[in-house]
Amino acid sequence: MSYKESSVLITGASQGIGRSISITFAAKTNRSLILLARNRSELEETKKLCEKAGADNILILDCDATDEQAVMDLDIPDDFPIPGIVVNNAGSYLYKKVSETTDDEFRKQIDVNLFTAVNIVKRFKPDLEKLDRSLIVNISSVGALQGLAESGAYSAAKHALLGYTRSLRAELLHTDIGVTAINLGQTHSPSWDESTMSPEKLINPSDVASLIVGLTYLSPRSLVEEMTIQPQHGRVEPM
Figure 1: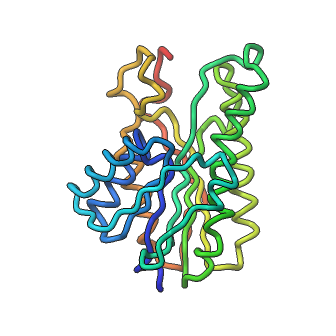
Figure 2: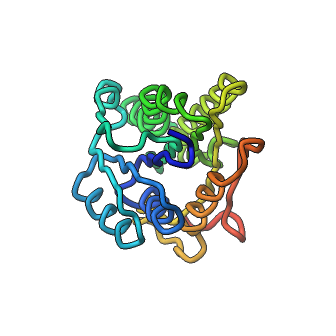
Figure 3: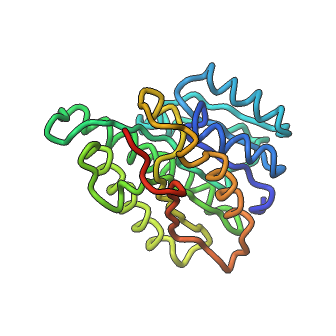
């Protein structure tokens, strides 16, 4: 199987940014889709939206990607195209000062924002290696580039994800697997539902999705290593 015939795997596909990425791939490509998240009913809704957008071959996997064994046990049917593009989008935002964050909350932030990607790459790297080329896209954050006083555990976890992504890219430099990090600023998603900020000032998740789809059309000679996306007018207040 070639890269052009491979599927795209999207984690955190049940809502928010992950759902937007899924729908955009459905609308703009002919690729088969693998949608992964914990909530099966919300995945079913994403699947319906993707079918409406034009996708006709969709596999949903309800799995807690922080559970290494559960990820390693994931089964892809023999007749389903293996993933050539992996979008590690699953994540969680904790709005809390470091001094007020419990050890358990720290661990959960690291599990969701780092180990979901680590586990998924470990499980699907053998499939990616079978293709003439492949791509891993890890959704990080501007919080990986600077400390965030109001969300320190999240920032620390995203620092770890970005460090992992850069190290993975260096490890795979002489292979046909590309690795891209996207450092997102404030993007409209369920994470902000309880805030008072205006959604119209936040990054449109459809824009993020379109950029990711665009990355998959680059020639094998080119790779976007990292990109940072911010709201047009900078940080949106209030939190």
